[in-house]
Image 1: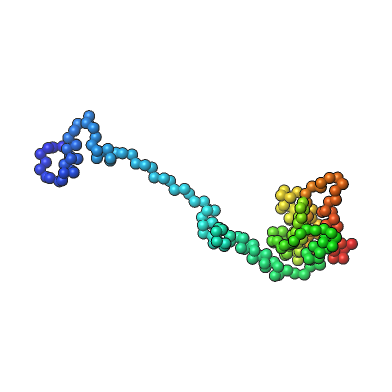
Image 2: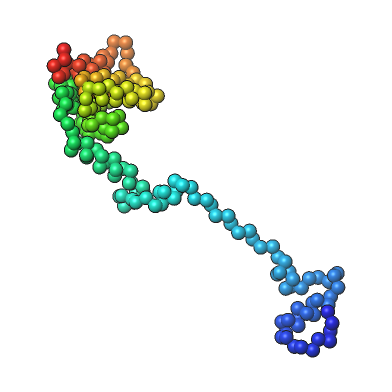
Length: 201
């Protein structure tokens, strides 16, 4: 650059102009070093999955818990199943009462989600090594279809399950393997009692 420039543009710019008069072997100015210094890469935002976005948008139920909307829906459905329960030939109350009379203690029973197996109303109870559920259907035909569907759906999850039907009611027994060859299988006793209800011999 020429040195006969007569316009004064400030001390800072004069320093920069003076540095331009050095040849290529001279070290670069501080300003040049700053200008050419590599900058840190900008972090790439982590993509948000569809499940994460849905969870962030869905309402929550209990304080401190997230995504309780599905649970609330199931609880509402169970309540509706109890309210719209139709009369059947072999109700759950009769089944559990008969089992208790036969000396089969299963503990406290509770209502469970019936729509999972296509039923209108279900109750379940259990004891160490055994679990029993009783489901009421609107017809014997619906019960037969529900039992077949449940068998196909849950076969891999519970291969030792036994199911039987009495009119429009289906009994499901899931038990642990027998303790020994001479032990009494409670599932056999439960099914025998169930089969005698509702006028069946």
